[in-house]
Length: 581
Image: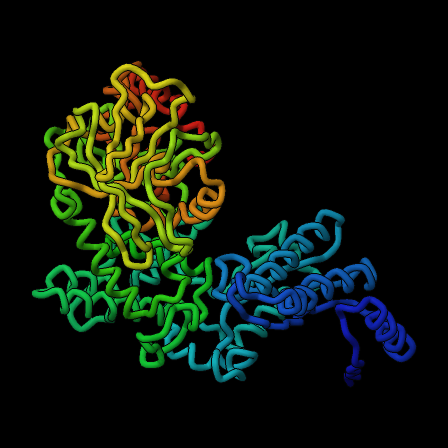
């Protein structure tokens, strides 16, 4: 039996061009019985820098083409297959346009099936011996660093199509998935290769994937002579005998991770160049940030990752932040006097504190103070009294901090020294987060800050109470603080407008953030003790794959009064502010 092949030229993304091509085929060919949509246009760029033309070029090849084929072809086809990409599932650096188009194809496939029509969307990973990866030099080099990818062969690809082109295939009545994902590696397979699973594998969306081939007590094993993994470099950092050795280990670890993330050999990464040169966009920056926190116990802001910092600079920052994390209380000249603080590294974004145990690493409990990555409430900015600081330099990275002697926080008048600093210079300071009191007259017992030039600023009741308790529970010398109502001139709309956009950088750069929830009431001491005592189990119940079983066990082990106390604590107005939830 012979085969007649026709190759009409047309732009499938243009309905008119497609209609003309189909009309031409209909005059000389049998009726069309199947469709394989495999168009692709790659216009890779970091989303912030992506042009509208680059966005639409890629989108047209996936969205417009698929929609036109759906509308133009006969309803009763033997198969309608769209070759999508695994990028639609886990994302891909600098390919937001491509991932978005592939996601549309998944939605179109679901719609067609809901109408009783044939449709399959195949999420395809990396093809190794045919296609764009094999034929494009930049992607071919990426195969050299593809230990975290399952490479698909041409033979496997044709076998896949043979299965899904079968006209009698009924996925709904078989074990064959309607929209298969091909080429993702399970967490157990990552570990078998000596690689720490990437952050996306921990998302609840991939809970089932994490269970495949994984024993219940599976952990990452690093053996002598095995693959070099970033975790072992973190161990090398911890054992470093000098600051230079620690920084070198951090830079090497960052380069190794970057190599895997962007599929570029480590030898091709220049530590003097910024990460965005290698395709690190905001999506990948979030994954890197999560990895920094998980493996290196260091909090690095997304803006630092996507900005102009070189790989070497960021590696040095990674080392410095790790030291700050480990020695936070001692290195900032503050130590805990009593069992009183909940502590984590500062966040460069907005923590969702309605589930605080998922965010906090516990030290000890107290009803009044938390250290967290929370952001202040700027929804009710108001005019303060005459501001006593000199105007800031208009530089976008300049902020103001104040130097306060913690031992004097029990006084009514507290000397302070304002200082303008640049966020680019990695200043050392502690950020305070609290709920603003309503505007009022100067209240009894109000604290007043007094600058060296004699000018004074009185503080509202809630901030006064915050600082009083802070002075009572910590011992230390002079420390640098950032307090929104004090460090931003509330009477200067231009300064407010320039400072508010810096909020995420401010909290990301802070050594720590202390959040004031208020004084003890409604058994809040019990709530804080509950979170402290069950920290590990509570966090596991939120983040681990067997969270339902863990939650049931946790619920049984705690009294209802404890849950009520925690509920009362989370009902405080602090958690209802727009910056928090």
